[in-house]
Image (cartoon, rainbow, N blue to C red; front, side, top):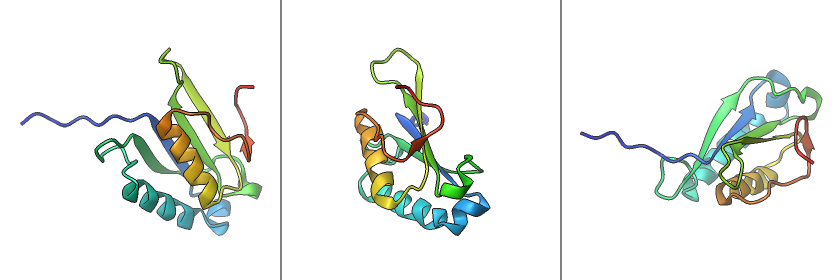
Amino acid sequence: MTPKFFATRAHLLVCQGPNCQARGSGLLQRALWNHLEQSALAYYKKGGSLRLTESGCLGACSYGPALCVYRAQPGGNGALEQAWYAAVDFPLARRIAQAAHEEGPLPGDHRYGPHEG
């Protein structure tokens, strides 16, 4: 049997540190997981391309929930693009996921840490 390989365009990480959990990161993780499943954006769904993982502290402890995304930089030069977000709610997480899947520009609101620009 030949193994099946999945295409991943982006990896989303949701902080599950104690401060982020106190601000709802567990609920955000589950809601985003359900969205990726229902919208067929999860990497193992036909046409899907996103991985979602729980993460340890992402460094925005006073402004959680925090989320970061890593993806191949659009244009195919092999470089990684990263974006870090604080105070993420479900609508923002959904927009980040959709932009990552479509290889479009990532939202600029609530960003912190290393980013281009």
